[in-house]
Image 1: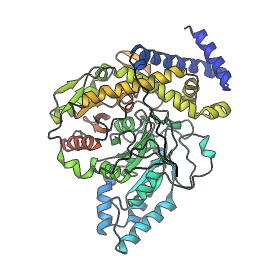
Image 2: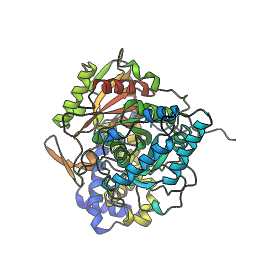
Image 3: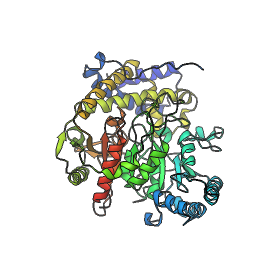
Image 4: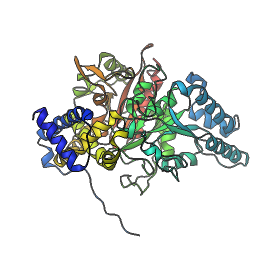
Length: 64
Length: 459
């Protein structure tokens, strides 16, 4: 994904969430989003994640 | 300020219990040290002088009346400013929260410290909303490393480490989501404990990332660390993550040493990007323990990546409304990461949570035949304040993203870890992580005590 495409994605997703990104913040936000994407690729590439249950376990509590 | 002038928690509690010193005098001396020294360190954001004097007087009164005193009677301490302290806004390192109404009650662990006889001196500086490994803060200034004030304390519990390393207090409380106790403990030459995920209740603290948030203590000795940890234990149903486990006191276990423990040294990922002196420190610790077994834990980089994603997504979701309304009021060093985290696809977060279960299974298999794993706490010693990049493995990389390289994968699956300082000559210290299977804080602290007895913390 190119930097321009990432910036477009970041800009449109932020707008849909109601977050305003000042022009001078954009380069950093795009950089951090790109870092997260590289982290996600590492995790997804294990293939193991898709075959496992998620870690969080919800335990309903008794009332009263 | 020399820490030799500032007695440890165990010594204070013993002297107060015997009537050799009044808690009020101990408290006044600590307040005086803060008044004289903190302008150069930046550890405290709030000093609770009147409360401290009142708590100390209550301890002295109880002793005179012949009442049983707690194990921390008269021990001064302070807390990272994400712990609620009645009468103070819970800043969590931010300018935004500083305008919140003051807390009406203490965090549960503050209540437990008080019940043990400890005396609260105030709230401590931290990286904004705990999203930090440096101890720097755009709103309140940096906490400065007392060993060299031109250097970082590490973060995000930077004020907690600074207050203890400067000798203002013998012990302090912090929090650790990805390394925020272990990194500053390493940089400031202290002992720190990140207990098992779910061991200590987080009730009354401002969160960062619910899936990974832990609370824990800092100290200058293992016995002080253990005494505080013992006082903090106990289930509380208000924190759904807190495990319904009994109090398992560790302070009576410390003298058992490393006998009978199978200790391994982490290789692979944990050696790739560490600078040579960090590896020498690890080697000294291993030698002191006679540890010759090595272990290359698989998929550590993926564990660190998954911890990064969970933190980024959950932390940003927590602050979504603040990002919408007041993004310009964030510390610029946290703001852009929080904004990026708010935009992550849900599938990345879910994959990371699934991989958490995979990695937990991996670590459980390893701990079936190993009791303790040693690893470096950080790849480097304390950087200079303001430094933005690091040289790791011959590459220049962003500093903030890489200080938690060795701590993040471990807290990712909630393992208990003691951070042990290693000093060599006059150089800045390094830290060694002593990790064990879940709920075996006793083993972490036994080994930490063995390393302390071997003298590696003193250089």
